[in-house]
Length: 269
Image (tube, rainbow, N blue to C red; front, side):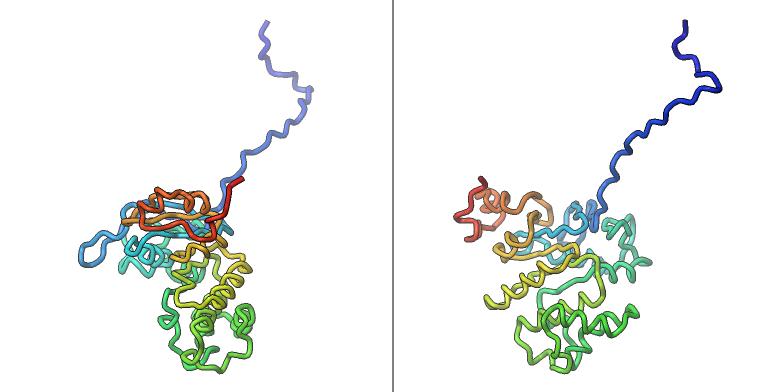
């Protein structure tokens, strides 16, 4: 007797709701086999690959000359000078290509290492409003961003007369006013005094956007970034939990880094 005969026409089989496999998490940033040579022929990035999930805060650490700043400039299309071939960088699933640059630059806010590179208008308000104006955003975004970084009332001040920490916050306000989904920060605490560092770290904790932070300030990386990438010689040599990586003395020594003081008395258990 064949046990695989179809059921009679008037027989109604019970409906079985099979669970669907979960969808893969959305990556805010995805970099796949990224290569880059400087005009002089020196290879700066050699097959860099990694992904950053939505809402993650990831540290990017490594010695001077590792390629960190060069990598960051690829994430909103400042580099390469001319985009061609198969895309290597994706933002929210969108490839970084020439035709997509306006949308990519709206989604990826880049904070440069030197605040003076981002400040070129006579007043704080004009500087913060410059980006939003390019994207057709209204003035309310500018005032809200200044309030977020604690600079409400600074609208008519000259950026050149502010402290280093205040300049950095003006730059951050200009980025936030564009409502980016991803924040990319290059040495955000460089040249800041201890108070400026504390204030900036407190601000960054409040911002829900996905963040990639390149920094030699390993204390900041430990405090803000659960995960880190180690870049050296244009290659990602390690990717993992920040505390585990920074507690690996051999790894730190090999790549010109050292265990930060904040971890001297930390024990994993």
